[in-house]
Each structure stands twice: as structure tokens, then as C-alpha cells.
Length: 403
Image (cartoon, rainbow, N blue to C red; front, side, top):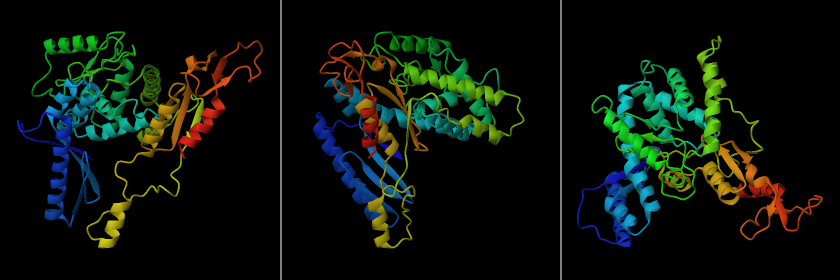
């Protein structure tokens, strides 16, 4: 569990990033020492350079200090990307979690609906393509702005509304404004227009929301009271092709749920969660193996001291092998293929070759990796220096990357 510690604003913080980092590390060391001294029987705290890890009753908490001055210094030094990531993780994410939790107290079925919608997204290999916070905002909109219906009462109804929202909303020309404070401070017409204007400016063709120069802006934009431009959770994702595939899957799932079939609710959910793997060019099947057992060691206070220390040493906090594997694949082969994964189940990674990179092109230093001379492939009339992607070697590289 990621936790952010917010300290009172003080002018005693230094004006140097390295000094702030060292002072923050000292805070982690002192925090770990105090926790171990006062609650050492049930809590085990360990300080690191950029966080403090706390193990308690089988849960792991990663504590990090949020310092607004640190983000301002990063922006002043031109480290906008690092500053944005810091603000997203330690400021925007806790604020978002607090808003969703408040809604969960008002709508009893919201929590189960969020879990069901996240499972649908991951089951169709859309992990990291649509962030969890974006899914939560989409579900929240189904509850706070349900017209012409009433708020969903059951998780299955919530899933149906979620899929209908994906299928019917005009994502290309409009931003979705989510009213998280609908009962205390509802969004006015003026604020709605302001959100639309800021979102349109952020999605201007030729520039990304983060100020990059890729010329491609994500098609999904979610605005709230605190994020009027809708750039926090949809800055870099989802990309165009994965988003289009997600919408096609949503239309298929919605048609199945709304069909007048006599199937029970549980069978409908199982049918909706069934993967569609025929659209991909290659599949990488994963298994846990003996080196990484699925069952994590427990950390019970009643364990013997030597067993407790062994379990703590063997515990891998925050490890997600599938996420790391997909990141490595995208780093090494992202120019030639798109990679899709289910991080929750962790059993499959799908590969889809990029059509633009599959064509013949002239050999160059920048595009030499992962290519094969077309003349050696037996092509008649192949020009000198013409190459094509070496699919066989890349498939071999997939296996090597997975260990």
C-alpha cells in the first residue's frame, strides 16, 4: 500500500534538491527507528533512500514524504517530467483515493463495481493501457451522473453502465467531466465549459498533454474539480490502437449483457470476461516456476522470531514480474510490436506487430537492430541494403527477456 506523508509547510527546507533528498532520508531513518522501538512486536519498519517500508499484520506499507517545494525546484531546473510524476504519485493519487472512498460510503455497490470493471479491463489484456484511477473515475461518473437512469444498485448493473459509457460517449470531440463532489459542490455550467476548453487545448493536434512532441494525444480525457484539463490520469494513455480495441470489446460485452438470454448473472459475467486472443500475432504464456512461488510468506505476530526474520527476508514487496517483463519487452522491441498483458492473472502476454514497421525499408544505423537483409531471405529483385524485421530473432528475444 502506497502512503504519502504530508508535513506542515516550513521555510526551513533547503533550496537544493540533493539536500532535500538527504533530509528526507534522515526522516525515514528516524521514522523507522521510532516505529521499531514503540511497536516492534507487531510492526517492522525498514528505511530506504526514498521511502520507509512498514510491515504490519501481513500488509506492507511504503511511506513517502510529499514536499511541494521539491516539485517546484524540479520544475525550476527543467525537470518537468520528474516533477509531474512526483505530484501524481504523492499528491494527486492520495487526493483521488480520498474522493473515491467518500463516494464508496454513499454508494454501497461502487467498490464491487470498481473491482468488476478493473477485472474486465485486465482480463482483456489492457493492463497499464487504462490506468486504475481512470477506471475508477469512469465508474464514479456512472454513479454521480446516472441520468436518465438511477445510480446502479448491483455490481452487474454498474458494469453494464461502465460498458455503455465507453460505447456511447463521444470521446474524440469531448472530455468527460466527472463530478466527484456532486452533493456538496456540484459542477456548474461555467466550470464545465472551462474544463472543455482546457481539455481541448491540451489535446491540440501536434502536441501531447505532457508537452511532448509525438504529435499524438490520447483520445481519453477525464476532468474533475482538481484536474480541469484532464491530464493527470490520461496524459500518456491510452494510445489510439489499444483504445479502439477496448471500445470494440466493450461493445461486444455490452451486447452480451443486454441480450435477453436466460443465462444467470454469474454466467454472463464469465462470458464477458472471456478473452479474445484471435486478434494477436503471437502469444507468450507465462508460468510462476519454482523460483517465484505464488504463495507469499505470512508475517504473523505469533510466529517464532527466527521464522519471522526468514519470512521478512524472503518477502518481495511491490514485485510484479509481468509488469517488469512487459516493460522490458516494450523497451527492447516496442518499435516493432505492441504488447498486451493481464497483470492480475499474470499468465499471458499478447504480441501485435506494427504494420508500418513490417514493411521493407533501407538499412540505417538507427534501425539496424532486429532486422534481416531482404536479399538473404530469397526475395527477387531486392535492392541493396533493403531489410525487413527479423521476426524469428525477436521471438527468441522474447524468451530470453523472460529468463
